[in-house]
Amino acid sequence: MNGRKTGTLVVGLVLILAGTLFLLSNLISFRVDWVLLFKITVPVLCVGAGLAKLVRHYLTPLDEWARGGRKSSLLSGLFWLFFGFVIFLDILDVIETLSFFGVWWPVLLIAFGLAKITDHYRIPGGIQVRVGEIFGVIFILVFGLACSRLAKAHLPLIDDFTWGDLTVSLPVGLEGERFDFESTQPLQLEGIDNIQVENLYGDVVVEPAPSEEASLRLVTRVRAANQQQAADLNREVVLRLNQADGRLKISTNRPDLGEKGRGVGTTMLLQLPAVLPVSVSNSFGAVRVNRRSAPVHIDNSYGDVQVSSQTGSLTVTNRNGRVEARSVTGSVKILNQRAAVLVDGVDGPVEAATEYDSIRLEHIRGDAVVRNHFGSVRLVDIQGEASVSGEGSSVRAEHLEQRLSVRNSHKEVAIRDVGGPLDLETSYSRVELAQIQGAVSLKAVHSTVSAKDLRQEVVVAGRGSEIKLARIAGPLRVETSLRKVTVEDFSGPVTVQNEFGEVVLENRTAPTQPVRIINKNGSILLSLPARSQFKLAAQAVGGEIESDFGEMAEAAEPAAGGVAVFETTVGEGGPLIELQTSQSRIRIKKRG
Image 1 (cartoon, rainbow, N blue to C red):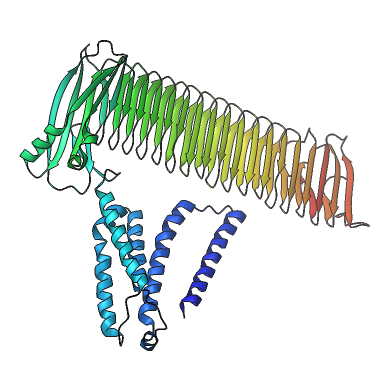
Image 2: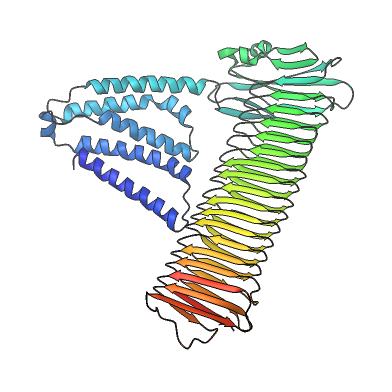
């Protein structure tokens, strides 16, 4: 099979797989984790492409090489095979791609050289080195050297070492022993009304001073060949205290040390008066702030952030590190990336955002605004209004006192015990609602919705969604298509519109409000207590009607024009029940 035919086959198989996944997600709420699928597909395609090129190279008849009818795919096959395996091992957390490739890329050149020598003896006359192979070798050289350099740079490739309750982070790949140095310095805060801290490769810890005296403990961890070299590097680290306009800036010259500073990490432990506002900027380390009575601002990356017992506003931005905020009196704003967020016990409004991880808010005495992307959201005990935007994220919420607004897709939604209205917009998901005291507005696309104990008006606008409702106290309006609608135990007026799906209404008590069901190409089943009293107007175009109520000896067949009609008054009459469908049947039965 030649390369063109193989490529056509691969394209066809990929299209069939992609189409099948999309069709399943549309028809049966089959949920696909597209991010994980993409992560797995890329290395698989790379490995597959590499193997295909190598197989084609070594299975090509020798006479075809002699005629010059085949171009070598050896180098590209080796590259894609190697690259695919590296990415796959990275996904499994076995290696880190950049560091691994930065060290082992010369293996590609060795393997290519050995394969060329093998071809020299395997193929009569050998194979000439093509221009494309020359450029390929140059590309591997440039790419490999770049990876080697980046692996040694100050990127998120760090190693953590414990110093008591502190952590000092250093770049990975450094050789030598670890040596620790510590110094303590008092801080003069006369005329100072705020503190700014800047650090790199280490933790920052801020705690209240036990007395009026403020202090800074600096821990420097050095990796070096010996004690003398470590001491020399430690002397290069300079603590900077700059005072201007009532602000004290605390930092070190660690960012200015360049290449020789790669083996140096610094951690700061500050004891400061609780009433002073604090701003912290840190990278490649954790930040912990405890028992402050003034505003706190934290800008961190590649490290966790923990704040507790805070009185005053709190603002945190972080990347690739977990953020926790507990027992805060004041507004909280947390903007995180690729790591979890936990907020517990806040007397004030909360705004939280992240991606590809979880957000959990508990015991919030204020409004809550949450944004997530392909992660999860959990809300518990929110006293103010809450808003959730979670594309590709699961949402769970319980014990909310006021309005809740949720927008998500592709993951499940579970909401219960909401004291106010609920606005929900979802797609390709599974929804479970219970004990909603306010009005419910729900938009669902290709989803499955199950709800019970809804106390006010319910409006459902669906498309390709299955709807199952129970114990609905207020007015109900449902519109969907392609899937089944089931309503059990309703008290208010009901309007249901569907097409290409069954509609089932069952009530334990006699209806007291109007019921209107319009269906197309789908059956209608209405089940009511035997002693119910109502007016019935049923019509089936191209279908039939069967009723246990009224004088109907047998099912009403389509009359002239292909329309079956049945109208009657049951008992002394009551609310009007209108049932309409086409190309299907209507069944009205008495409950036992």
